[in-house]
Length: 237
Image 1 (cartoon, rainbow, N blue to C red):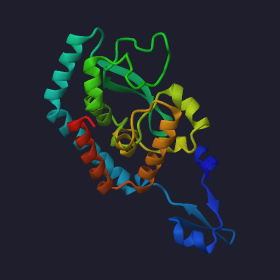
Image 2 (tube, helix red, strand yellow; image 1 turned 180 degrees about the vertical axis):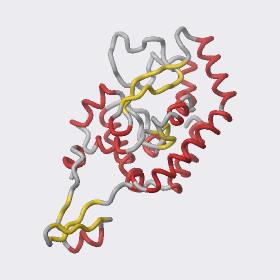
Image 3 (cartoon, rainbow, N blue to C red; image 1 turned 90 degrees about the horizontal axis):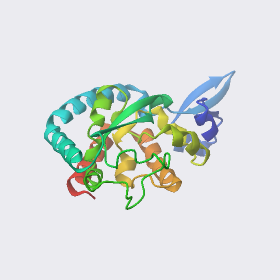
Image 4 (cartoon, rainbow, N blue to C red; image 1 turned 30 degrees about the horizontal axis):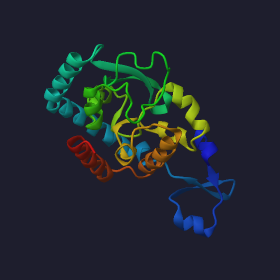
């Protein structure tokens, strides 16, 4: 099943009685043989279209309401460290399509000049004092509301990753490519349940939450995730 998902091939199986009553499946008939396929994710149905409408509305209102915070963050970044206010980086989105993700810069300018792509570490010296506050309260993610309006991201979904890691992680993290069946999110279940990615083990743990969201996405779950995200922003925890 994992291999078929990675290759975007429909998976069919002949179930026993236990599988019939425990899985959410769709029936198919092939030459008189009854087969069953895994149901599509909620995001691939009507809910996905409704979610996109909510995303646009939320991003527009969010940008207006957070404008004072955005301006204050931009001023603090400019006054306390050299380099641009915004950090634009290539990330991989829906169906593995690359896009330019916008963030507030929280590290020193050209932080990866001598190292190449690496994850941030605990107590990473490359993170500026202001950047540490912005990251803890998730304020550095606010400019991504622009990505949401452009259709590249969703408010809620799997975290977008860089091409360097996307090429390598599927080889060591089972079902990693499943996350590209949805628009990446500013926040998400994995983001509020687990820390920033620092190792492949972190990614492997977070993919469980990404898959759970893909299989159980609903407005009720979205509201819970948004509520928890606001709590993180308010408390820094």
